[in-house]
Length: 266
Ligand SMILES: Nc1nc2c(ncn2[C@@H]2O[C@H](COP(=O)(O)OP(=O)(O)OP(=O)(O)O)[C@@H](O)[C@H]2O)c(=O)[nH]1
Image (tube, rainbow, N blue to C red; front, side, top):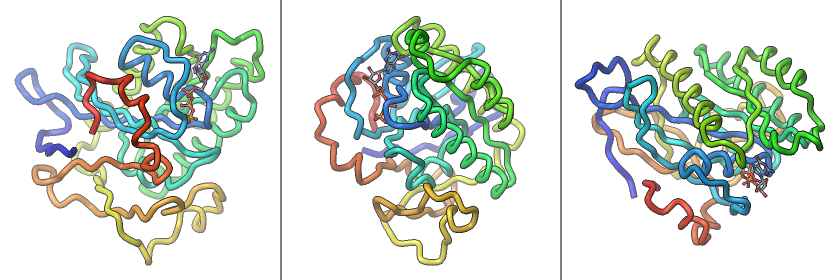
């Protein structure tokens, strides 16, 4: 299902349409991206979630008394950034998640932050990102200290939080709302200059992969499907397209979708 959006994205007064913010959740498998997304959307901790499912959810939020139409893409990369243009050109802000009890996931989060930094450099725009050390309730099995998280976030100039998808909802909500604030700040700075893209199932022969240009071995275009990008003609006519990896598409029948029944899934 697709929906049409033709509302202003920023600079909204009290009478205007909600600000629209796209948020992508990145991180290694098992870091807790889905658990955090589900916690934020439903206030519940779901212990088992289909690792192959990638979907984008929408939620009406109020952040600092301002209505926000928030879309959250719970990505399902394999172990490293893959086919990453689908979220790089879509999101206004990123949550990069690792698990405090996994050194590997911390190392992956560093790769994601590097990817975002490269993309920011290439597109010459600031990309808000927040680094999250998840599974704080597992602190007794820590492999990553809080100081390491702070240092990594500092290196990339992003906010840092330690959270737990299975502890209090308010903290998780606070983090998502901080991401909205970061995105809003950027959108208000340059609401019309940000590139907007839709995806299309077609080959992109002339575009060199980000990896080739920057030597980031793990991120490629079209690794799993033939998604390519096209600039939106006008916001008013544009259709919102659900962006899914092949891996996700193959699992669309997963029953776990019903977990989010009641939320708009597009
Ligand atoms: N104790 C604890 N377990 C968590 C937390 N967050 C997630 N988990 C568990 O960690 C496992 C992986 O969580 P997911 O949310 O599926 O992780 P993911 O990053 O979405 O992983 P993929 O879907 O494979 O990309 C699941 O068994 C969750 O129950 C947390 O904050 N604390």
